[in-house]
Amino acid sequence: MQKLTARVQAANSLLCVGLDPTGDDATVARRLREVIAQAAPYAAAFKPNLAFFLSRENGVALLQQTVREIPTDIPVILDGKFGDIANTAEQYARFAYDVVGADGVTVNPYMGDDTIRPFARPGKLVFSLAKTSNKPQHGLQDAAMTRGGSISDWAARLAKLMDEEITDSTVGLVVGATEPATVAKLRAACPEQWFLVPGIGVQGGDLSATLRAGLRKDGSGLLINSSRGIWQAADAGAAARELQEQINEFRAVTSPTHA
Ligand SMILES: O=c1ccn([C@@H]2O[C@H](COP(=O)(O)O)[C@@H](O)[C@H]2O)c(=O)[nH]1
Image 1: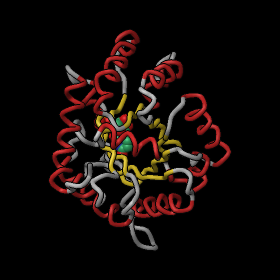
Image 2: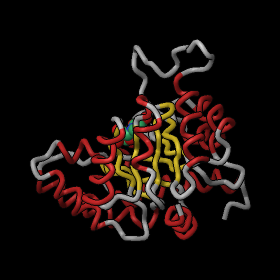
Image 3: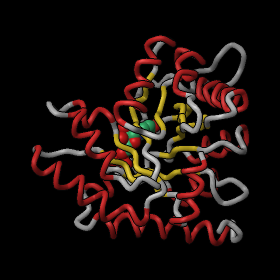
Image 4: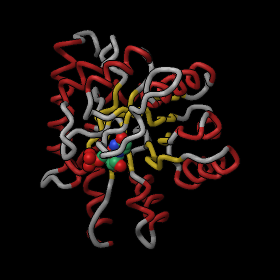
């Protein structure tokens, strides 16, 4: 948490640079180095997606190398969407933190609080899926529940409870930018928590509506992710800078005291 807030301030950035590497092995190795070097000055965090590494024969080694190349003052969130019972989750936590060296993870809270607890190590960032950015034809998250509210409301409530209970690490939420009204609803329910927000760019999320809905009163509290938008850009640094500036222009107008 301290590392994240220090980086957000030092880089004046809420940009999370997603690393979803595609291409042949030589291209991927070169492009990862390039994207990290070019985008780092504008990044509040990097988010490698585990699937894009595990799908390669040397995936774990590549992921470890990637994390080593990220400057040590920039938090790394391993997007693994981990979600299993406690003793299994403990193994995933050892993988993410001890093998890979990540500062945080994404978790799928569908199985309840024991999927989250093993990841809540001191100083670590845990982002629990609440409202995801994809639009499945048959989604679960808005299904009405007998006690009222949708599954995403309950997922947000669980993440808030965990964040309140676990004081030496941070439990935030994953909330997609593709539905700003839900971002606003979950921000009202969780006024202080960090939201990791994918869905900008290729997925069509609305940046300014998301910032309006999700920024905390202090002009912070969101990590806006872009993966393909930066990976596929001719100039990854320029793409990262442009998005960082768009975010900051909005913050300057709505929360002039954020800096
Ligand atoms: O709700 C979610 C949760 C995670 N993701 C992940 O974020 C990136 C988005 O990539 P883009 O190329 O910027 O669309 C990717 O790793 C997803 O697995 C998400 O999109 N939505």
